[in-house]
Length: 143
Image (cartoon, rainbow, N blue to C red; front, side, top):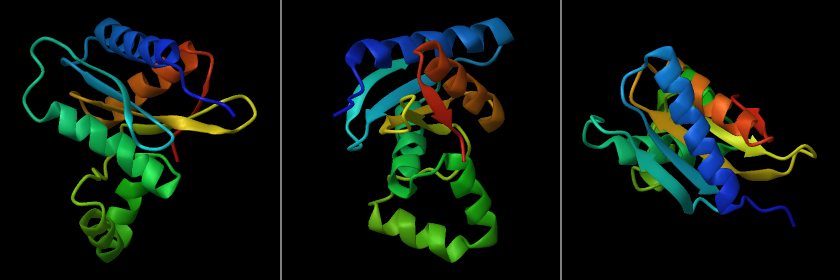
């Protein structure tokens, strides 16, 4: 059975933060969850505002909840707000339905987990999440 290792999770975080720094983004926060929705690794850059852990976790958790990147959740929040409201309620408020949550898969397509990034625009957060996943030699699923 494929598993997301701590080493891979730490590589994802380091590469995501590096991508943000190179692009001049605001301070980022990155949470990496395993396929069961459990926190594997987390870092928050100096200067990141409060609640960033909860937002990063919620982006990743929401992606795992629906098997799609959180960009899909964002789209559905606009088109089917009642669905996202219900999903948020049944998850105990843990889902954040904006881009920046990206599924992590191996080369065979097996789901390994998800990464959530927050701190800059949602699009920029997603760019950093993808950069982190790819730096670990894994496959990013944004939608």
